[in-house]
Amino acid sequence: MSFGLYLYGIFPEEIPATLELQGLDGQPVFSHLIDGFNFLYSEAQQEKYLASRRNLINHEKVLEQAMQAGYRSLLPLRFGLVVKDWETVVTQLLQPYKEPLRELFQKLDGRREVSVKIFWDTKSELQAMMQAHQDLKQQRDQMEGKALSMDEVIHIGQLIESNLADRKASVIQTFFNELNPLADEVVESDPMTEDMIYNAAFLIPWDKEPIFSQLVEAIDQKFGERLRIRYNNFTAPYTFAQIS
Image (cartoon, rainbow, N blue to C red; front, top):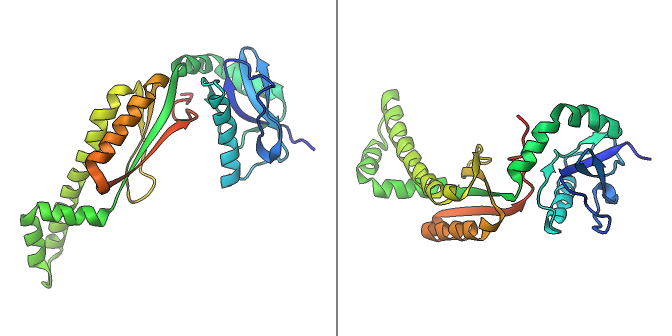
């Protein structure tokens, strides 16, 4: 029993049937052309899909395999998009958003999204900061074991927080100075965990990725064990395929 169509993404060119892709629930993936927009889809076996790790990976895998096969220009659709029929796609997506979709294809043509996430150990950074600022360390040590007023507690806390923020800003600025010149567009997002200090996506030309990767590696070596860097060089351009 089919509950409609599960949509993965939109391409400006037809995806041939010879490119065999397997979608959610093990369903074969097809390409359907509407007015110059090619939709990757499979028959939906569920009315609503749970955002489980397995389902999310399968959704992304369909798009990544198409990209690996050479179909690099795409507009990825959000996970879990099930529509009743193609008429729904026309009335709810293409009719109101046809021109913005075409503009997005032009923007993404020949470009790819890569992302950089930076992590550090806050306790280690705090210790290193104290060693670098002996006056602040001495001031904190002198307060240990004493009954402090609220103003004193706030004062020393603000000094420590301010110096730690400066260290963080210095790290981020290094990445900014080295990587941003290669990007056509950069989107910085909020950190996802407490030990993540930077989270950014970069829209870069496809042929610039090896250079970008080398820069990330060079920065990583510069900071040594101080940072952990998670670099994703191959993903569908979710961050930059947004309709305003």
